[in-house]
Image 1 (tube, rainbow, N blue to C red):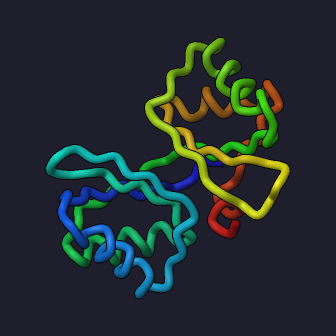
Image 2: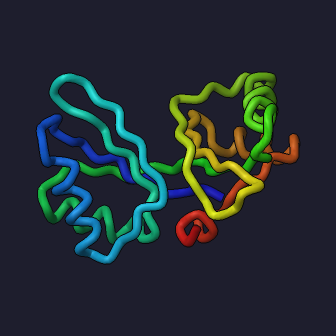
Length: 143
């Protein structure tokens, strides 16, 4: 039920993102979802890829600072209130969200979101109790 996410330290300079994504592409790794947060000097690129362990290895071999963390992927109805419903059940359980980002799939009826929380097991249990779809790694990596 947990998804492996790459977090890559990126210097905030022109062309750096192109270099990193080229390394991933040359290794035959497909990006499924991404988010980048930056400051003046650096950023953190967060990626969901189809081969996270291989991606970590090739990026580290290229001299990048990379870590793998576990996140949760949820599927929600793609209609008004679908997202709010999932967020409400976490809020009622007192589960805070560190960050999140959405990603695209070919399913027009569902929207998908990556969540990073402090307690994955508790968040998964809460979401499941509230009938929120939790995605397995294999399904996300192959979307």
